[in-house]
Every structure is written in C-alpha cells, then in structure tokens.
Amino acid sequence: MELEAAKMIGAGLACFALIGAGIGIGNIFANYLAGALRNPGAAASQTTNLLLGFALCEATGLFGLVVALLILFAF
Amino acid sequence: MASNPMEQFTVKPLIEAPLFELGGHPIYFTNQALLMVLVTVLSASFLTLVVKPGRLVPTRGQSVAELSYKFVGDMIHSTTGADGMKFFPFIFTLFIFVLCSNFFGLIPGGFTVTSQIAVTFALAALVMLTVLGVGFARHGIGFLKLFVPHAPWYLLILLIPIEVISFLTRPISLSVRLFANMLAGHTMLVVFAGFVVSLGAAGGLLSGLAVAPLLLMVGIFLLELLVAFLQAYVFSVLTCIYLNEALHLHDHH
Image (cartoon, rainbow over all chains, first blue to last red; front, side, top):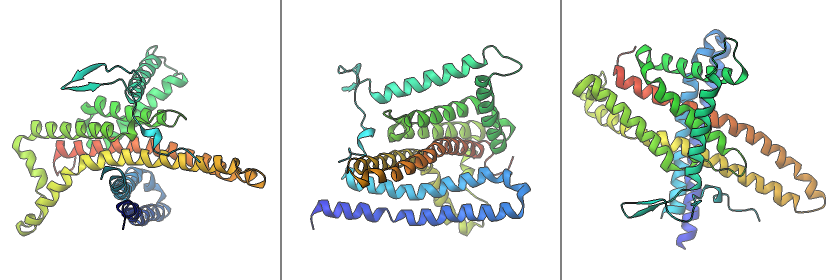
C-alpha cells in the first residue's frame, strides 16, 4: 500500500475517538438533565461540574483529532 | 472548488523584514502577533475606560466590566475558597485574553490566536508553572504529598505513578483542549461554507438549495460562539482547580 493512502486511512481511523467522546458527552448531559428534573433546586449549583465533565470528556475525543493531524502533517 | 480549510491557520509575517534575531532565528511581526496585541490592547483599554468614571448607576459598558469581574470572582471563590482570591488578576487576565481571542477569531477573515498550539501551550505552561511555584512556596517539599492519595500502601504502588502521570499530562490536555476546539470549529465553518459556495455556483434549482447549508452555517456559528465562551470558561475553571490543589493539597476548603 502507498504510504499516502495508509496515512489517509490512519487519520480516518483516528476519528473513531469521537465515538467515545460522543457517548460520554451524551451521558453527562443526560444524567445532568435527569438529576436536574428530579431536584431543580440543586441544578444551578452543579453547572460548573457539568461543564467541567463535558470539557474533560470532550478532550479525549479531541486527542483523536490531534492524532489524526499528527499522522497527516507531522510524519 | 472551495479553498483549503487549513489555510486560515497559516502564520505569515506582515512585515517582510524580521524585527530582530534571537539565537540565530529571525523574529517576524506576524498576523498572530498583531491579533494578540490587538486583543490585549482593546480588552485592557475597554475594561479600564468603562470603569474610569465609576458611576453609581452603571452604563452598559460598565455593566459588562462589572459582570465579568463578578463572574470570575464567583468562579474563583467557589472553586478555591477565599485565599484563592489573590490570584484574581492572573485568572481574570487569562479568562479575558482567551475569551477575546476566541471571539476575535470568529470575525470573518480574521485570525484565531488560540488555534495555535504554541499560544495555548504557552498559556498552559504558565498555569502549571504558577501551580508548581505556589505549591512549593506554600507547602515546601510537602507539596509532593499531592501525589499520595489516602489509600492502603499496596494500592499506593499503583496510584502514585498514576497521579504523577495525570499531573504531567495536565498542561498537554489544557492546551490541546483549547487549541483543538478552536481548530476543529473553524475548520468545520470553512468546510460548511464551501458547501454553500459550491451549491450556489451549481446553477438552476441547486442554487436555491444553497439556502439549506446557509441556515445550517448560521446555527453552527451560534454554536461556535457558545464554544468560544465555554472554552475560555473551562480554561479558567481548570486553572482554579489546579491552583486549589496547590493551595490546599487534598483537604477541602
């Protein structure tokens, strides 16, 4: 296989990291919403934790993007 | 065909001649440097000018300054407690710089400073060096207790390396999160804009269909505005949390 073609396939495969990030972000917001509907009074105090969890989770997906960019441009 | 979506991230010198040489490397005044100067000067002068008169009933500008002050103040207070407030200038500057850079990058034809890993990593390295400095200054060598969680000794063999690695990857995750979010968002905007252009140029019935991706573009742009704010917020909240660990180690404030 040509190196260029292998790079393209590798970069595409690296985007599978988004599956995990998608599941994770969905989980975080779903559980926050479920909790917030049960106890609306405590919901506002937890937005920092919500956004923090969202950001930490999203970062794992973005590492996949960085791997893809490294494969495409750095090697 | 649409232009290369990565083209917007190229750093190019605005003045052909290098400003000076540093260790044999020519230093240019680039579009990135221009935007950083612009962001710093505009945000600093705006925030100082609107609060200068010190009106009792604030104008719109003064309200913006006061709200952002209170927002960051509350954030620091809720994550680090009262003794974190002496880091307010540092965190407020970080927040405003990242926020304004993100928003300036959304101006069409502009340049996003925070889409450069060099900039975000410099910011993250600054944060981590501050955390290390504060931690060692306050606790001395006892700061290393940060890496020893409350657990039985046989678990510590496993946990201490994990804690050390997680501490060492913080600057990477802090910088990569901001950089990759901006990079991905702006690339997506250009790719979707390419759909609008190529559909519009197709002619006939297809040109009318170009409205659909255009509407989608507006939606994505609004999402990018949210992301721009959210990433600035997350960056400063994580800075606060890391500072809190340096200040209080494991015990809660």
